Length: 440
Ligand code: HEM
Image 1 (tube, rainbow, N blue to C red):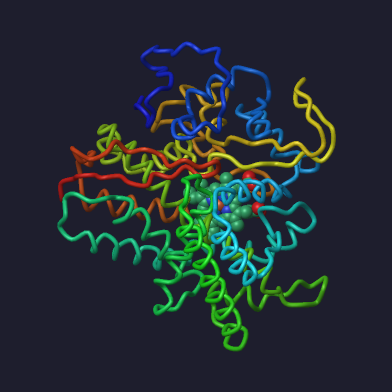
Image 2 (image 1 turned 135 degrees about the horizontal axis):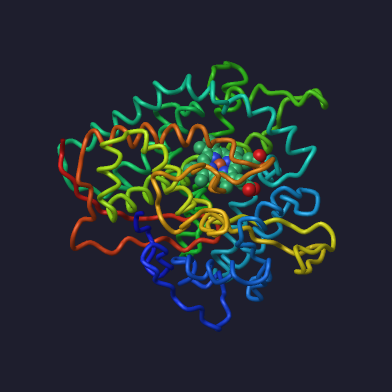
């Protein structure tokens, strides 16, 4: 059994159990967001759901409860955008009148967002999902293996003979960003703008407070990214190619006999950008931290390379890059004996369900022999299960294979700040990770 990336959770193998405190747990407290696993454990031992008055949400932390809610899409709707609007309002509440005026001016240039997959229920959800699902099949992913491998090899080459790197910037971020950029079909000359825009789009889900200037810069970047994508959509309508933008630009909603409009395409592309880049970056980072803290992982994979796939699944399970997402309750209901009213927001914590001992034996441990290691919720489940999971797994598999061929004895670089998650309701990011290794 292997120690995991946590400082304060139960260690099953050694029999250490931290006694539950009676203080009310606010799962959105900054300290808890950064290090949530002990709080999750305490909540899992309590009622089916847990009310957080500060946010007025009901949090689901147990595996069976999360699964039940995900499956019942009639009662637990994905049309929860109102929740994000509230969060956004809180985010800009501190802005001065001048900053707000500038933000409003920029916002007027944004094409109003149209809910497509992630935040839409049936039948609308399937209408859009079936248009893009062909882009992400296992067969399609196999076809793209050579292109992903090339990105990986170029990133390895960019490391040169350095034996010390900031892993997130040098390796974890560029691979998913370049892969999604290529799949979308971003021309070389627009890549820098695209990278800035994709990074800013994902940062919208963070809770790190921004200055007025940063808010304006982010809003301006969103406008620039939108303008770039609209230009590419129009270009691909007149000159179709084989990339994702081209396919979306020329896709038809057969029941309405029309092409997708800009709002719809931008909404789908936005999901690919945020979901397709930041999450896989985090997955690389958390896995590297796990590896650095547990040198036996490297030895085990070296003696049995098949263990790499389990290592990737275990790292996704233990540090779910998407820690949680909301659902909107559509009618009065109860989960076990916990009562909910229509209009309530339930917050699914995938990161907690993945560490539920009722589902995974010694759930806080990375177990390279674990059977059904992929049964976690890092990619969600049910109708909204992650469409990009095959692509992500491919990037992680190829990325790790190349890295472990390039270097060995991966370890945390001494004298650098302790790696720490960024504060976010939704994502679990690792902004900085300094590592050292020996070249092979
Ligand atoms: C390690 C990487 C990734 C993680 C952890 C992840 C996680 C998730 C999760 C948890 C969901 C479920 C949402 C829900 O329950 O409502 C989801 C949905 C989704 N993901 Fe991913 N994702 C990853 C990579 C990707 C990639 C590479 C893409 C595309 C390029 C992508 C595109 C999407 C889309 C479009 C949805 C919405 C699907 C729907 O609502 O039908 N994701 N993802």
